[in-house]
Image 1 (cartoon, rainbow, N blue to C red):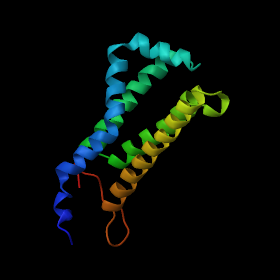
Image 2: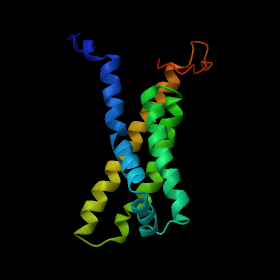
Image 3: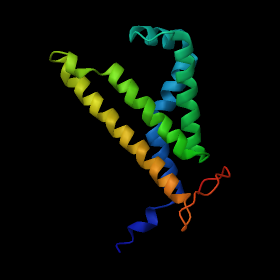
Length: 146
């Protein structure tokens, strides 16, 4: 091997997970600090009831990110953010309804968000795989990162 495997450290893994969660942490903190703006964002996209949806979004973005970074039910946090991202992407980036030049930017954003979904699915897959024993039974999650 080229010695590259020495970079496969728990610290680098955590930094990668932090990068994947960065937009959700920033979004969650921004919505929490300007909750009226978060409610207005829900209303902008025609989502109702806006106030409970804004609150649930804050809890989801921050809570699922904490699960991923802390290693407690990492797979569940990753699947939650993947699901959220799919729905949010279809709501916020309907490029197929737009005319140029808006269509170009919305198309890029749509597929970039699908890339995030793929990343979260990989996180969930790896976490579930790590928690599976040789016999194929899931190991209990004791709250410590594997």
